[in-house]
Length: 230
Image (cartoon, rainbow, N blue to C red; front, side):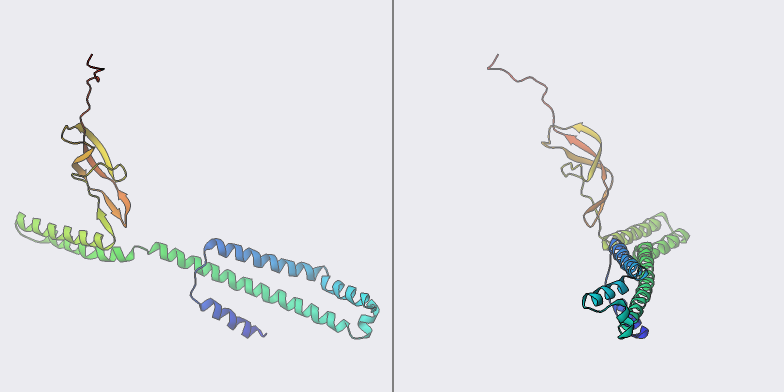
């Protein structure tokens, strides 16, 4: 196979859309390097020539006969094939290393710009805030403008899967609520949120921030139980 054909085959494989985890890339690269090391070791120690001589002598052909009957050309051919294999393996490793570096760079770019769409949607909110600050009008007009901007922000959060944690009037849930104050209330049977000091939010069901709340606790009966009316 020519070098051009080998490069074309590698480009075709490289152009396919697939994802390889960084750990898999490291394992594959290590395996390829071990294979190249084995080829170089075998070529350096003359294992190919020794193997051919052993087979030939076992069939009644001496080492001297290898050159006389033309078998020496087979040794030369195998040596050339080993050298070619070593060269192609080295080039493949170099190409693979370039591919690994390019993949790592692309993953880094994806992480850096993962929130680009969210921030792009946030820019109009900033524009409206600046317009509200520079606009002239009554206090009521300013309040209406701020309310519109707040709705815009809530819509942006909702489009990204951000939802408010339900707190007021719900049963206290330590997974989503953070209690900073408790008080007894005989009207409740279970710990219940009676006041929300700070809203909590989730994103696609995962907690971003717990709701800071005040909790009403059932009244505790401090009187000792009577024992058979005594």
